[in-house]
Amino acid sequence: MDKFVIIKIMNEAMLRLKRSKKEDCKRNEKIKEFLEDESLFFKIRKEIAIKVLINVGVKEEKLEETYQKLIEKNMYDNLIRKGKIDPKDDNIIIKYN
Image 1 (cartoon, one colour):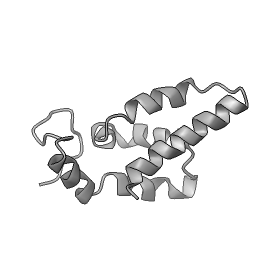
Image 2 (tube, helix red, strand yellow):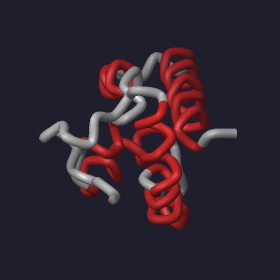
Image 3 (tube, one colour):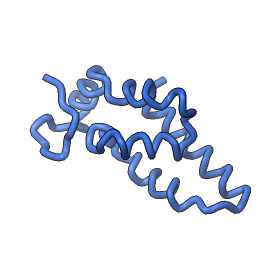
Image 4 (cartoon, helix red, strand yellow):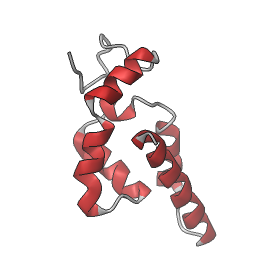
């Protein structure tokens, strides 16, 4: 399964968990909005991406590995094919040739 889809599912699960515990879930609601853009991780700095991954529940020892999978060249190429990334877009921070 696509790593990005897994992150979306994890965020949904975290939202349900926080709601059931009556905890503040504003951050995860905002993350849900951001995750509507499949090219998100190509548009944000690594530091911000790591914070997103922490908030959706990625374990600390898996943060770097997960981040790298989300920004792999094949993910980039797939998003270009799907029309989700324009390589000429100045908002894209991580680009491949």
